[in-house]
Length: 271
Image (cartoon, rainbow, N blue to C red):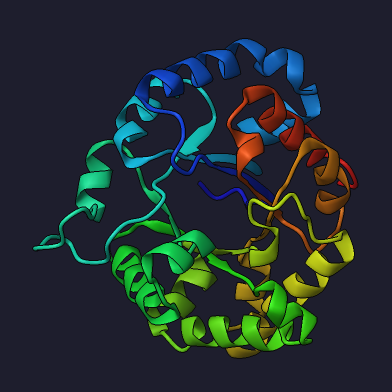
């Protein structure tokens, strides 16, 4: 697909929606697609200029992929291991995901870092392995509340990103559009707090400038930088209207087709 991606609206279902609920979600999404979206938005999505992604739990991937047939929606995995196979209990490989049609993976979410011990180094290793196996990745970065209050947001983001751009594999992926970023301030995850459009844009600019300087101007234009953190239909219009925000990584509001589609429709604001 040669169409340049303009915006990505991605839904992280976390540990919600089993196979039956996923089927119901996709059925409702299909039934309300025309009513909920303007013709302009539908055209953008159908042309792949705007992309709609969902990341269901592992047990739901196959059902969600089957139920999404005919919809312009990408079903991705919430995590995966970088190795093609091996003694890694509880993990998924790229080839396993490919067998159910999954070619996009979310990596480094703050909950994976906070509750399951993932680090910048382990996220990089997973990303390198998956990219080498032709899997597209969306990598999360972001600061804690203490780090923001200490004025360290830029330092934290640059530390996380510089490890990624030190890798020739990630550099090539940013150039080709196989790797994208989600700025997720940890203090806004599941708290109801949302970064202001100005805060989000400032963080996105830090990330994009670093990619421009450490990778290339082309990579800075190709990479999509999403905002994630208590995104709702009410907050999304202002966030998505900022020129430096290329979409949203949505948590709770992605569990209902109506609110998810409302956020997608808000992507048209300011475009």
